[in-house]
Length: 291
Ligand SMILES: [Zn+2]
Image (cartoon, rainbow, N blue to C red; front, side, top):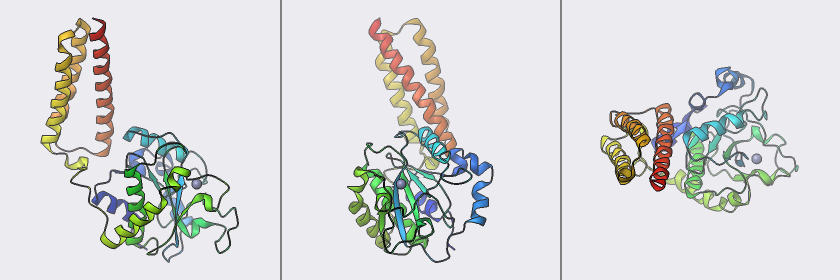
């Protein structure tokens, strides 16, 4: 059997931000449910025949924290017993990846309800499922189209799915719109990209999208400068209480500046800190206008 983390390993090497179940706070992981299922529901030894594309029907995400919350919500749906994520992969429209059920372990929820001829009833034994983490009317972004193609290509390159396997939308087999018209409209593009990545290797986005573990000092400093510039622009209208907020912003900025590396948890905390800082700055702008 291939390495069960082979898809994540390839995505990370290509510069994709990936979060394992431990990292997104999976309760079932802590309880040992995924480890047990590896023993009780192994996939057949041969590479799987199909890729399946789903939609999670959860809120659209913009941040790591929202992605982690979405993954925990999807885990709680109960499509598996005990509750686990039923899909192998969760991908967000900002291009982040959250780990679901293991490769090499049977998922749930992809069933041939329409009895399409030539396909088994339990399709989970014949393929792996990737879900767009969003609602049916949310945009399917270019980053997401690329990431979906990368996931499918990585499966084939790792040997989890046979080369040239078709990508099926869930709606082919179920009386549902899943994965939604917006995703279905981009399936041909995903198929073409997947074939190109299998042929030429995954694209390397490291130049454009530096992983946080190698966040260079000059980028950190640029971020601190941006924050400082935003503060300066509002300086003229300061009220008394604003000085307290500025003190907090400087503390955070210094904290950022002192950083050389950051784990995904650090990044999540950092994101929360920056969001708070932006909220402070927005409030500052309001104060200025009132003054
Ligand atoms: Zn589905």
